[in-house]
Image (cartoon, rainbow, N blue to C red; front, top):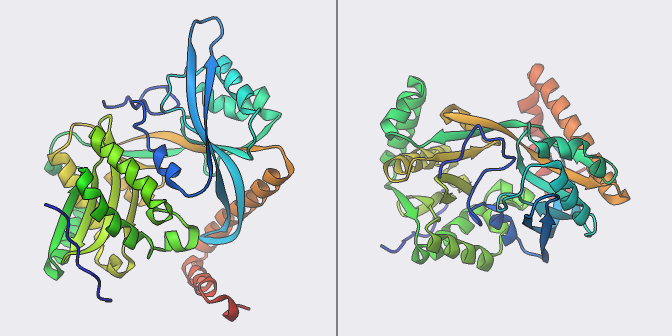
Length: 384
């Protein structure tokens, strides 16, 4: 293992049955600020949406920014399409889930210049979900796309004690997690660092950026913390800390940072905004160990609420105590460039799912994946 520098750091629960199309967080408590920390020009927009037959109006905030749409076959990127994307969040508004309100909202949106609209966490069964798929105004102007459709959004209920929580897990799971923690502690001095104060942000970011830059997720896709503007991200974390919403974790082994969770805790919900594992330490299960120790800390010192695992955490769903369905939704403008880009991405996604299922069925998925990984990781001059 390569030598690494040592690290020192200075000494309202939401209703799962709600019909709302988004989680009911207080203003500015949602995590869209993380996307705002990407480099590049961004246009911040405010729309005042009046409601017919009522003396009310809603202020909707969103951003239009350059973003890459990835055309992938499995984990391999075949093309990247730069697009102007309106990242629309209804988390921070009181907007009613009504067709007349959405008619007025999208009528105003259509006057703006962009290629696509991206929605996070749309709940099926809501007026918004049906409107995005079949609203007359949208059908004429956009193509609806949800890559996986509604998926379970997994949560861990942070009520009771950590010991009570672990009792609901299988005996094998408990044994494996405890064994991983013990083995790591035998190998190195393990320290879990909780980051909540402004003075702790700089050393935490130093470690998070160093880890993130080494990950495949960043090197291949430009995702995670290392892709964010350091100054913008620090300012946002300072803001969260002053509001009492910052709660991040860093795991060090012999004072070497090996994994991190950049997290936000507000409205009795802990949301891991970003996470990373140093590839040099991956064989020691440091990501799993960090999650286990962070959960123990949250159960011991946090208000009752939820740990939000999201929809992409299928490998962690065994920890979940609750879930609900939501979907990631794209609306692509019916114009030549966004139509071409989205069509190619749809085709590649379909081929990936069909090919992956077929290879898995005949037992060749792992071998083909290793072969393609080796081919794509070769320098360009060595590729055929």
